[in-house]
Amino acid sequence: MNAPQRHRAPGLESVPPAPADLDAVAHQLGRAPRGILAVGYRCPSGHPAVVRTAPRLPDGTPFPTLYYLTCPRLASRIGTLEADGRMKEMQDRLAVDADLAAAYRRAHESYLAERDAIEPLSTHPDVTAGGMPDRVKCLHVHVAHALAAGSGVNPFGDEALVELGAWWEPAGECSAP
Image 1 (cartoon, one colour):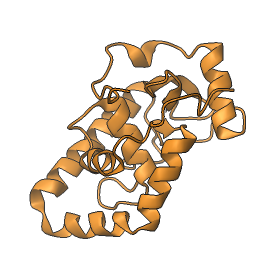
Image 2: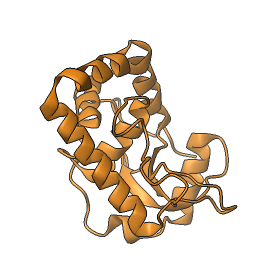
Image 3: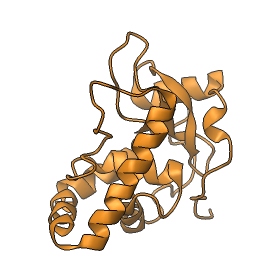
């Protein structure tokens, strides 16, 4: 199967998820999804892999994670990278690579602008997700952001995706209900 597209689909985030998408996400997560605004990225087999969520859950709880990874196969493989110490390596590089730190700050600013365009979170005005802009604490968030926003937006998400390779293979019904 071909590599998944990594460019942002125009208007994708404004299309509410179909009932089948919500069913697939519930199956992937093992619980009912909350606060989903749209599917942010689909794996090559067509299933939701990243969802775009509201800055507040339906009960009003702040939820600063705009892009939430739902694909269990991808989540598992990212967990392996985290267990192998990639986050610490990335964090260490932020302190010595000014260009990387600037790109990471731009990823944070992009994420924050997108989230705030939906609803600003006054309780967390400078927090996005995954440790941005100064720490690296969740590769799942960075990969979700990279897949939904496209290549060149989140340097650590892009880097993790390169390292993961063809995470969707073998293609199939890995997340179908």
